[in-house]
Length: 227
Image (tube, rainbow, N blue to C red; front, side, top):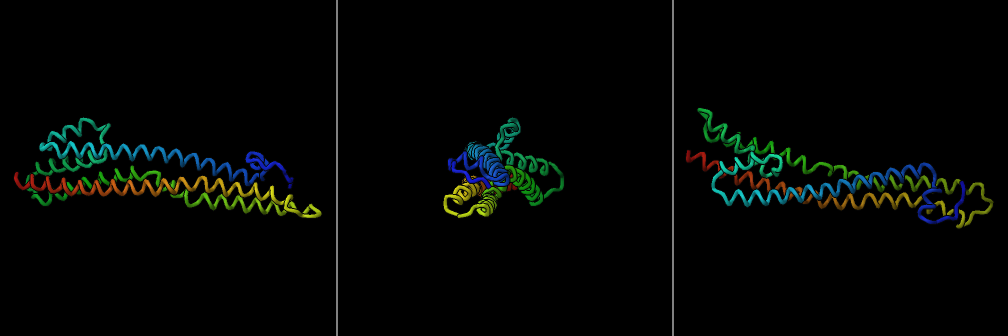
């Protein structure tokens, strides 16, 4: 093994073994991908929260469910999750009410199933890429540690050709190897923080959607009882 005295960050990377360099490249790529998902998820969750708040304001300020339904169906491209849940539930409610012989219990059961199916699809979208962040956060340190162990093994193997081993001989190799652990932590820490934060935000949205579905079910049940 060549003992390098260049202890700059770039110098240690270029003088590391091929295996360590491959591990560093992989960790850097994973880190870039995780940052991409972090920012995209931040924007999507913010948009979902704003859309939910706007729809709730519109829903509770208007007593006419048919007008809200028409508004929701006319702007499908920009509809938020809560709006889609309402649209699916109210559409099923109107369809079942038109069928002869359907009692209110069956109508409401079908309405809840339609809302629950749309709710699940929307939650799948909100939770997308979170498993990737969790995987990066849990695996990256171990990948970096593998690179460190491999680099240290090479550093000590290189001492076999040295008559007298000193710290000056082994320090550069160990320093090169420890970069893999540092890059692994650099990839893992933001991913773990983002995963915890976004999981909490998604759970809050899920509770919000659940509450809305219960409230909408009560409103529709009262409407079905009057008709």
